[in-house]
Length: 546
Image (tube, rainbow, N blue to C red):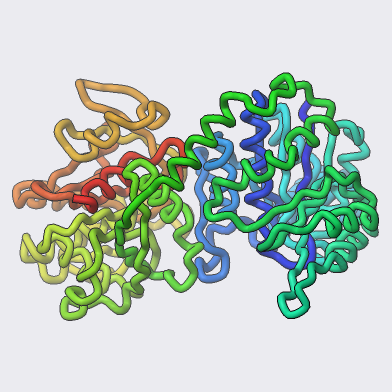
């Protein structure tokens, strides 16, 4: 049976519950345990798939095609495990499931209530994730903060579950703020005390308190928190701001947080050795991060750059690649609306490359086309992802083939040259039903940049070799495809089709010969890891580095 760790937060949001949960997962995995991660989100949307990137940030897509919270990206990057549709649940999904069961008569005429029906649905979901994953330890983060009305059913559910599985089999970690008042040079523990009081009021007593502060919290303050919140002194963990996210596991380990967790859950792993090899490898990676010298500046041209979390996985993937290249990465955030053929030279004059990520809707598209054109004509390394690939195709059709109106059917339904279009079997399907979501195979063209990148990558991305062609698997989140009606003209004009579906019907990647000008329909950022950087991001930065 799995052990369960529940991570809650108090005082304010954005304290780093997700990073804490992910870091603990990495530490426990280093001890030889199989880890599963899960996020319970209190908002009423069924999933984040239709939420604005300006409000929610990026939508992270799992192998099996679930659209999930961005925290799942942190989990995957830290624990290096592929999560599933059972790894993220919202209040909307909970109520959706309950109401559907009621309509189908599964409750046999019972009065449907928050307790037990909603809480049972949540508990079943938590247990299902643990069962499907086969994890030794399942780490469950509850979104929001203590006191939020939306979170109450989740808190009640985990309280009940702890009772059912036994307190020896579960652990509660509470992440809360310890403010530092610079004017009086004081750390204030009262917000943490009040937050714990709120948590205890719903029947949950924290076993470990993770105190979040930009500065190291003095011992006397930690002892005060221990005394007033009724936890052992070694269960008050200081979580300070680190230069890199990937230092956090080491910071927590230095305070023996993983040891405390194993002790309190009765887990006998890694023989109590505080210097196990897997952790040493992580430490060496962090040393590599700090050893970077110099800087590469790339422009990220997007529709949602006002909220950087909209491109969180891309940012992290660029960081991962920078660890390999040995130089720091600096991102110049460029709103695609600001780019024209006239402004492009000034905007990109100080950039070594351009990356163009995914997005939906027509806003900012023409600016993206201008950015792509500038990159191609000036041989500036260009990496287009999802929409970025489609933009590369549109720009090529306009500038090289002379199709001035070339566009995607998504942006111009009446254009004569829809080089990006819905497939025939997608036409007439309601919005959402046409999305390609999750992992799909891609056959790589020999001699392409794509082949060069993936030949040297970690083996998890390579699924097979067919007819001397590499076959890779990457995740997708898109609706429109390369229009095969224009494939012959594109290829004759010099556009290389460097990746297709195994049957050759879907174009998955394109390149322009003689330069790093690559577009991929998939999202390689979702599978990049700090210790196994996404191969295309590595090749992109190498090209930017000259």
